[in-house]
Length: 363
Image (tube, rainbow, N blue to C red; front, side, top):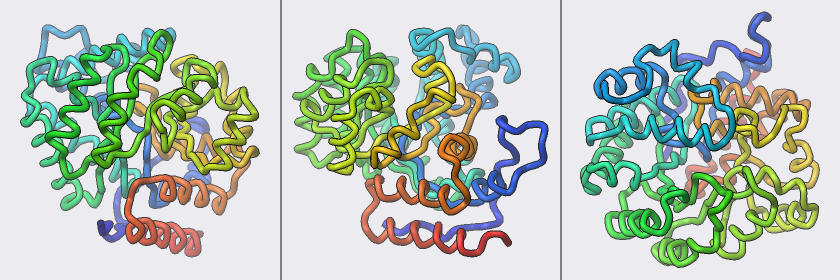
């Protein structure tokens, strides 16, 4: 897979909400132009307020506000359960293949503005097929948007099809069937999302076994709102190659050592963890503990508009938590490349872009 050439003329991220009263800092400016990869970002959860409002207007029976400004209050979450409730109300706005295609392309457009060069987008087919969108039409819509995004925007998209854990084994069977039987060209991995409490990882083992046998990588969420045992279960039962979130891994030194030794990456999403109350404050976030233990961490935005963030902001958060300069931020960006499922040539190309950009800074 060849990555499109880096286009330094693309619009840049304007500011960080962590520093709203000050001019754009040198580090924020560096982050804005830095070529990046993102590995933990959700399809529907990436819908911008403009797109959510447009979809809500098309489907007036929904409770989702049609005013983009009102969505700020709507996307204020009491806890993780409330986040899931709001998230599913937005999922309900995706009702036909045209909605799917529009959402997917617009997500890529927002990525291009941040100089995201490559993204593994977590897609939940079951949420759409159970609402009546034919599986083949769903796959065709995301694939059409993927090809257009690469050609027109220079953003390479790949898919992680995930099981919504709260929907149980029926959803697991449907997701596995679509992934293995329809197998879109952009599909690289298989995941598990949704609530963790009351949704043990081990029950999904047969479905992950089938997906892995079909050549897909295993990337379940684990340890976001439960303890480190959920991460161990994802590793042992689901043969996880990366862990989505893994926040509670920091509570278990043996687990951190295992992740570091076996170079199993954690997909860390700092602002998401605060928004869903998985972590109380940024000062308490275990990112530094993970890094100090030698774990390969990647920085991600999860559901960016819902959490009032984007990948540029998340890199700024990580830089502050880890006290990084531009070179340190560039090293974080290269972690995402290393942990991605790009082929070796694409990894080398994007790594070289990051190095070239960093060497030329400041301009």
